[in-house]
Image 1 (cartoon, helix red, strand yellow):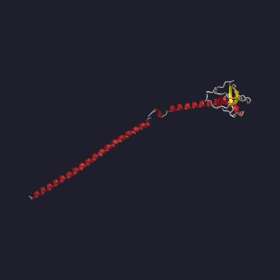
Image 2 (cartoon, helix red, strand yellow):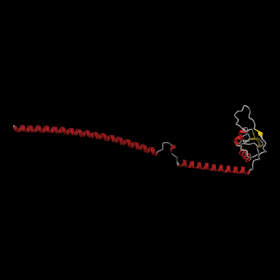
Image 3 (cartoon, helix red, strand yellow):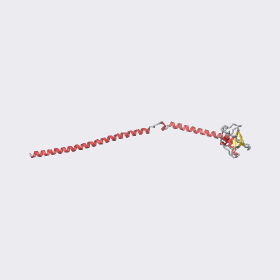
Image 4 (spheres, one colour):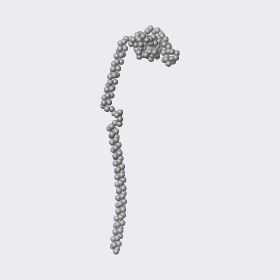
Amino acid sequence: MKKISLWALILTFAVSLAQAQETATQQQLDKLSGQIQDILDAQAQQGKRLDALEKEISDLRDKVNTPTTTADYATRDDLKKLAEQVQEIDRKRQDDRDLILKQIEKLGSAGPVTPLPDHHSHSAPRASDGDTSAPAVPSKGYEYVIKQGDTLGLIVKAYREQGVKVTSRQIKAANPDINPDVLIPGKKLFIPDPNAK
């Protein structure tokens, strides 16, 4: 009987040892299973992040490769038209320059402006008493009769050559009723003498 008891004891010990090992193995399997599940979840999260990054990169490529509006870029035709417009403007500028040079030559060859009359002083035309906005004009000056081809600039130049340091602005102020761009021959101008007191 001792043998049976011994075998029973060994068998019981072996069974309990097997159960303990099975429990430990089961715990290890559960632990490994949990770790595997964590790794799979982390992998799934990484996959989602990678998908999101791929989509963002794709969207950025699309934005870079396609303009958002037509105002962001110019085509070759746009640049060609712009170049033609610049050339046209330059041609017009050159034509204007040539015209101005011809007009200057024409004015230079027209001869001098009628010389100053003898230094007869005249009083400046008075503004009406109610007109207080009239600029201050010297009360002494000269009377000048406009000749064909005269311009305000030529008249000022002729008087300056005679020592009267008058300006176009002073003549305009002294003659508010004239159009300085269209001087009518035969009309009289008052040329103020800024040197007169």
